[in-house]
Image 1 (cartoon, one colour):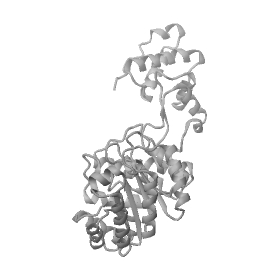
Image 2 (cartoon, rainbow, N blue to C red):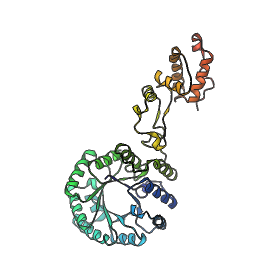
Image 3 (tube, rainbow, N blue to C red):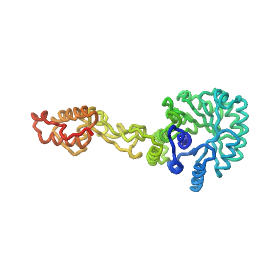
Image 4 (cartoon, rainbow, N blue to C red):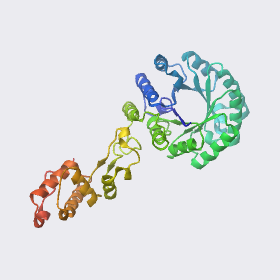
Length: 391
């Protein structure tokens, strides 16, 4: 089964300039739960009154089994997680894996890291029933060392290995090979990926990982995270819902969660953003508009109404006769066939002048002026820009 681990409240909250109040985090956590996300990472283990408040509220709702915390691989933080968050069953341990990180960040050897993993994972099994081990900078780590870590971690009690493409070094073909080899070597170890989006490959990598056999991928609402962020939740969720038929997700709640986060994080949602953009189903191009008037499914990647969106077909410089006929019919207007090219030229000319498509109200005004002077010899004398605005 393909599963999603939402890291908005941990990775997403690390985005430069993003500050979320505790009540906002709690509301978002519960929205993600209601959508049906399999695991929600609440934050980093540390003494934090806000996190403790959020955890108490979640326990009060009796939904804590789907929530987890990110925890550094050290004894102090493990004990802190157990003490501060009673009832917590899922812990996401994390350690650097690449030679650079081991040498300059941990200042230990690879052998010492393996020993530390075994020792602390065994200790974690005393407190938590589900232990995940994340490997930072896994994409700059040799596969052979990743296999060594997986061997040690699995033997010590880790249920899931979480590989992080911290600096966007992986691409789909590499992901395929890695997943296939991991699942062959460790068929009983759950495999998860955390893809950063510095080169715009996060969604492609995540979908590839899942389709190849990975059990989990990390996602973040609006793709929030360090630098360019990580795999956007909305993109993978929509893929699973529309392309894989995973209808157990409550996709209708996604826009609410996204706009709630957008408002409180100060993140603008692009009108053309995949899945969520309000202009996704707004079309001007003649060929496409004509096709959409004939049958929506010709140019419809998914039913827009599921996400609170709708088709909007507009006329402008790129429009053709088919689109004009469809728009006039939509507006309840009729005109002789012989006048259609003349009317279309006027619409195109005004759209080019204003640098934008025309609104339905502007189309109606042009039509009304056209209807007043309906003799063919007078058509070219009409001032179609009268009363039109550049708003």
